[in-house]
View 1: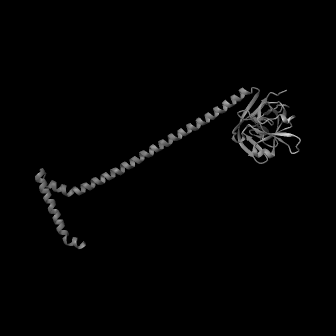
View 2 (view 1 turned 90 degrees about the vertical axis):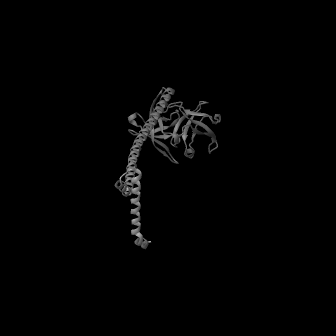
View 3 (view 1 turned 45 degrees about the vertical axis):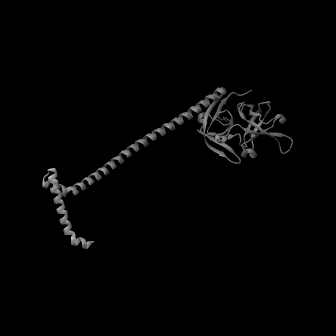
Length: 279
């Protein structure tokens, strides 16, 4: 192939020139353009075509970068819009939760006009095989005191305040083995003591002890606070009788109470800071 071009290259170049001249002559006779003009057009055509292609390529690249800049600007605007919408959603959720808390507190106040409440958020939980306590984000600065009774939004007993700081307090729940509340069988008005029990802590239950007549108990009996002694308010729901059992001695019976409050789902509670004493 290389020898072919070496031997015949001059003839190919000569033939190309002859053809170009003939095309120019024909073009001159057919279009009326001058010979020189047509010759120049033929000779410069490849260069003009190449320049046009390069110009188109450069224009395309420039347009591509312009589109990228536009898309980036639109992307940043969309990100900003999404961030603003997310902030609006968070604010709406916070407002909704606050309204729910206010409605709950209003409902409690309507139920028991004799109570003064302080709402508190649970900031820590301590649940083990031998204890059940909650830490609240309210303390003596909000008039919370030791022995204050703590309830949930429905008015069910959660526990009793046993430790108080300036802006925190510890609540011993009804399930804790050290918990003891004066209790009343709502149906029969029999008085007893609702107490946490170590053997029942894992099942989330407590015991009802010291009833004068255990034989009158039936499953489902509602157990409320008695209010006797003036330590805790009366009529607060503790739970219901789940089972009546005989103790190890076989001489007396006690009841297993299923508490109404679900300690695991609690996020906010209400501390009863003042109440009218039952006499």
